[in-house]
Image (cartoon, rainbow, N blue to C red; front, side, top):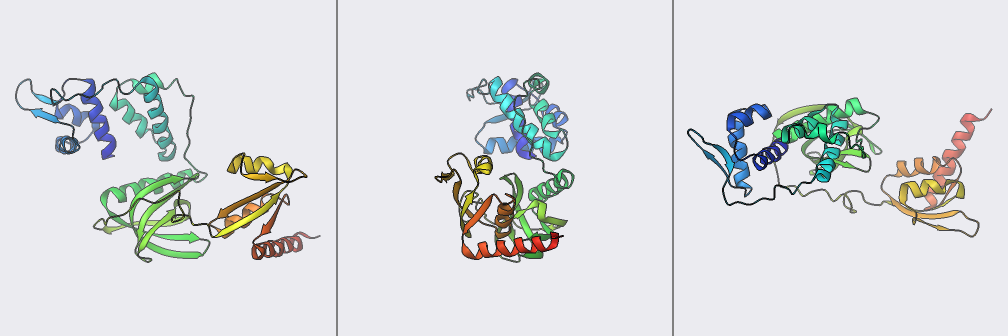
Length: 301
């Protein structure tokens, strides 16, 4: 949580003229040596923080350096708190709310009454997910290898990776890492990871950020055309937005989209319980027909 602590220290310095390393160390429950390293990091970031020794000395922002202390309004603080609460929903603790209290004592209680927004990033697997996030977060900070068993539509495998980033996207958590087996960057879905183990240290390499909105991260392998009954129009609007389909003369919906995962595509069609007809591609249409026949045979009485 070094970045969180740096932001909090900066907030303290903006809200009071001067403080001391022992006071900061006590507030953030770290050593004075850690605080001294944090002050150096703030200086390297371009914020002139000076430490004066002796009676009446302390840590302060250099005179003449101007920062707008009113930059964060009450509404801004409420938005920050909403974001911090969302992280607490994953961690299963109140560590980010406690961070807010350290940044500005009393602020979290003051703002807690304005809970007009609630963001819950947890999944059905909250208990195991929180443990994975905590373990992976620590491994990323310490540059330690992670080994795990991975389940995917293409089969199961054992992987050893260099972890770099935790990503929340499309209602799921992912790990962005360098896979030593594939010798390439990969996104791994946390819910598919099992038996995580922390390994030895590694030297970080230069890694580009994942292109989560582009074809590189989630390429469209299957472009489909689907006819969906008007009864299930709400599903399309909910999942893809009001303008995602064309309406047929009889009121049904013609939907076209790209899918990365074949199994997800087939499950999505089947979830309409007969209200969706896959028109293209033909090979997947035939596969759906075979699945339907297998289901019919198993449930025929």
